[in-house]
Length: 161
Image (cartoon, rainbow, N blue to C red; front, side, top):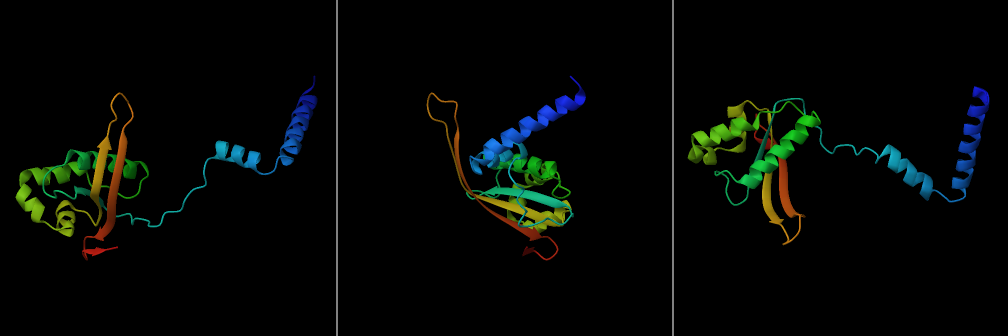
């Protein structure tokens, strides 16, 4: 068999498949397109300026004491922001060091004061209102219910963007 015959047969099969699919409507081609191309990209509602960004996650029950769930959420969000190159990030260890040095003073600082102290131009502040983690007995599944309020604060003006 020559190369031309092989290409001709592949094209004929492709055309036959397309003809069969056209009789089924748009559902099958759409499903295949989604399967292989993935969902369409969603444009962001807010694009961070490329200035140093500090991520601050606090639990609603305590703003000055380390909360393990808030710290874990902070690490996950920080890694996601770094992976997507959202903005130059301030190391979250700096926040923990500042909190460990003097928890009382840390609790009295405003968000913009924290940003200024750590060299950030903007702060992504996540306030955890609700965090319920449930592990049903005899199951490996974990159910999480979380409610968060997010705001971006410009450090220089102390205004919410």
